[in-house]
Structures are given as structure tokens and as C-alpha cells.
Length: 150
Image (cartoon, rainbow, N blue to C red):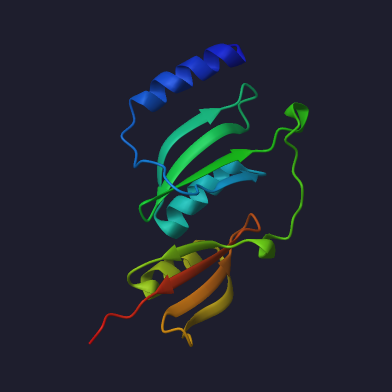
């Protein structure tokens, strides 16, 4: 199937999906191993995969749309042959943040799925309970929970 035909098929499939509207900033991560990353994000963060578009090579993903905690995350593999190679940038330069209820459950699930604990859940000076993790793809994640008012 040609790239044009693949894109037309993808457009038709996307039109049939009921997804939350993308507003504001939507992260789009270029990863090595996007298919495995989608499975990890489903286990670690309760992601729902809305759509995936495999590349013609059958190994990589041209596009994958996920919803995590009500927000959209787009991921894809790197395609150096199309000018989109992997450029190692320390993931500490950005962090994917999830503001959640029940931070303990979110943190436990992510750690059990294989996320590396960078900072355990603790009360912070700004009032939230907060934790930091790194996923197997080098992406940093933070979790925050604002305590309920008494």
C-alpha cells in the first residue's frame, strides 16, 4: 500500500473514532519502540490506545494516539529515512506531568509496570503530594495530587 493510500485509510479510521478534542498543547513523542511504549503506557498509566497506524515495514508505528487521564498523547517511531531520526536529548529537559486523584495508586501501577522511581511520593512545599518516574524510553513523568480541603 502506498503512503498516500495508507494516509487516506488512516484519515477514514480517525474520522470514526470518538476521541477527546485536542486543545492547548498536545505532546507528541518520537520514540524508539513506539508499539512497546504504547503497551507500557497502557500498563503504567492506564492509557487507552485510540488509534495506531503501522508503517509499511511492519515494525514501526507512523502514528499512535493514546488518552491518559483525559488528555491526548501522540507517539510514533523515528524514521531517519524521512528526516525524523532519533536525537538523544536528555529527557530531564522536559517532563510529562499527570495531575491525578489517588497518587499512590498511580505511582504503584507505574512502578510495577517498570518505571524507574526518581522521587517517591511525598508532600511538597506547594501543598501537593508529588512523585517523579522515568519510563523505559527515557521520558520523565511527574505525578501530582492536590489534597482535598478538609
